[in-house]
Image (cartoon, rainbow, N blue to C red; front, side, top):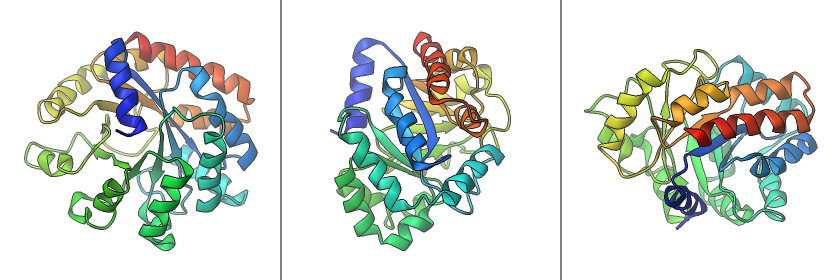
Length: 263
């Protein structure tokens, strides 16, 4: 059982929904992002998604694209992102960490080496948005064998014919993308999300967590009421972009966590 599996089992036993946050590793610099990451669990975060900066993030909107550019400009590398996790694990051995990003940096490092290094650093799962299920032998299956969850995205365009393929090797949780398009674009609507989450849950026992378009505690609460949890990324990354002090960002995160946990 991975930290992700254990966390969701604990939340289920407590009757609580999961609050998941995304931040970009190295944005605006290594020290600040590590400081922010360390503060997330105390602010109510159940799972941390840590972005791996990449030059061509095709699924991301301007906010997260710019975060990746800032991180790369400050010298962030895949190795430094692994180092961040190792540093975080010195004081937190419980909170699950999911690497989210694109296949190119992993491929460049070599799959076997990357998986060994990720596991050793304390990474628990992967979301790699540009690897479809047809490429599961490339990374998904090796990741599972290495003890890492491989989390798949389902979207409003994932129909009943496609859904079983998306779910077949997914573990940890299913990430439902609430809108059609890029991150940070439109606002998520619980009335539209609810039936889609129910459809996915009828096909899997995995928790279904909803992300994209969640910016306020109220939206987080509404989404969590129809799903197993909510993900917030762009709204937090925007605060980093604005130069908001880490303590104030964490206060904002806590408001989102409180909203989600009320859901």
